[in-house]
Image (cartoon, rainbow, N blue to C red):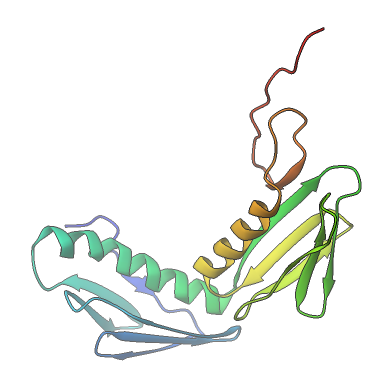
Length: 177
């Protein structure tokens, strides 16, 4: 039995969950998320908790057991508090600004790079070089943050580029004269 899958998920106050067959809808103060799950997994609501169980005992159902429980837990956390990823820009002349819903980056190219806000994603800029990506869908927040980082990955010699806050960049030694 899965160590994570067998743990029940508590439903906090202010969050409503409806289970329709294999589709789970979670509504909360920040918004609403809906996701369909595999029919090999049974999802039930009992005593203000969500219980995830396997219907079959094969390898595929075993791997989906803990995943399903984690996804439901993330959905509940997302509509209750939301998720955020912080990025930092390192480099002379690098800056970011929010224009409407979109994020505009100036990172050393001849033109500004525009990142569009998809779904419920919101951008915030602290100062000129810290970017915060916020949303209720954990996967979407991570994907958008990864797209922003891909615009100008940090290089190993000076460390210039866009990196996650707290990310360690391995430095290389440059040429010696």
